[in-house]
Amino acid sequence: MATLRREIPKFIVMIFGLFMLLGSFTTIPIFDTIKAELTSWTVTISAVSVWLGAVYASYANYRLYQRNKKEGIEHLIYFIVPFVVFGLQFGSGILYGVESPQYRWYFTNIYQNIGATVYAVMFFTLASSAYRTFIASSWDATALLAGGIIYTLRQIPLFQVMIPGIVGAGEWVMLVPNVGGGRGAVIAAALGALALGVRTLMGQEATITEGG
Amino acid sequence: MSVLSKLGKIDYRWLYITSLILTAIPLVYPIGLSVTLSQPVKDYYSAIQDLPEGSVIAVSFGGSASLLDEQEAQFLATWKTIFSLGHKVLFYSTTEDGPMILQDHLGDKVKPEDYGYTYGEDYVELGFSPLGEPGEASFAANIRGVYAADKYGTPLDDLPMMVDINDYSGIDLLMFQYTACTSIEWVVRQWSVPYQTKVIATTLGCCGPMAAPYYPSQIEGFLSGSGAGTELEVLSGNPGPGAAMSDSKSIGILPQLVFIAFGNIAYFANKYMKKEDDQ
Image (cartoon, rainbow over all chains, first blue to last red; front, side, top):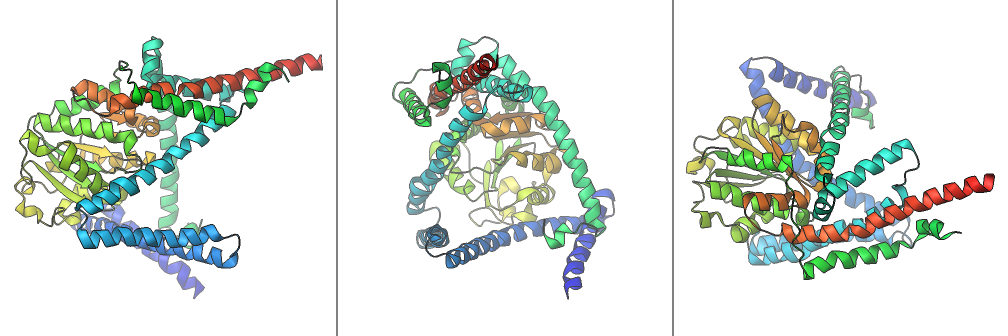
């Protein structure tokens, strides 16, 4: 049974991967059609995975709460609140429609503001961590500090006025060293992905069936 | 402990409170600082402006309500620019928040009808679909395979603008809006490279450096952060919310820069004193 659980997913990945490769690297129309059809399936799979994710997250939080009811109260909150929000959103959507003023009020005044607040709170951690870590303690750290400061100053209109040349310097940081490093990283990642793809198609990649 | 050493151990709360106060001041008393235009923003604008009138722009809209403050200036200035030039627009949302943001923008803030547009003939909204990279590939190859109808349920064949549009060949320019930094690769892999579609992008300030490697070859121009939104407002002559935000950013960042300087002064002071003690 365990062998089947390992081998069947590998076999499915190999077959579908082969179709995708044939669709990309041949001009035979049938493979092109199969590739287009398989690609459109991913939209459905994505939609299902959102639900699956919600179910898994809820179940995991419920289990964590059950394990430690005294200290795991936050897991109970994580378990209940999504259902409450889902109920509110779904309810207002069903009752009034998602185009309705009621739904828009909920979206603009509650959802949007809570989301923005969560992101805004990150400012505090980012600001204090920059204070602690943006220290020129080594050559690497100095390069990071210099690049970060120049790019930050370039983004701020006040310094564009106060420091002549900061715009050019900031763009140079972004479009020269950043692009060089970025392209190197992208090419390295692409080669890695290619190797992973070949291993997967050959059934050699254990992580697809056994977890990373 | 010397005064210089103490600079490295200031209570963070001073940083928080001074930043909050300084960020709020320009909202009450706008400063109106001038803005310097950057090349990616100029190229973004040129990519829209250089299209012949009536060209079709597809907008892959992955806007997030939580991050809207960072990007709203970009969006509003872009819609105004597109509509004032008379291009046709095909909106499709790749995030759940997308349709709601577009409804707010196109329904209230920048109404296409004010520019003489008619729904179905000059612009179409396709609604939300969780596309991701494979979905973008699918959309580029066969729009009706992903969206059979628009967001109102009207079959695409019944919309005059969509009669001749079903894949990348009907799109003259793709505007790709995203908030997850690496998503820029989707559009490069699924639009730019296979079909040579012209692409411009809008994203968060922190994602700009990850878009830069693809500029200007695969992406003709990009906007990153509210600063770029302000630049587009200035460049296109469409004032919006970006100006006030730029003032706040200008002043609000000062305490952080001062604290970073303090941290470095303290570090070198400590290093110097340790050297003195060792001798």
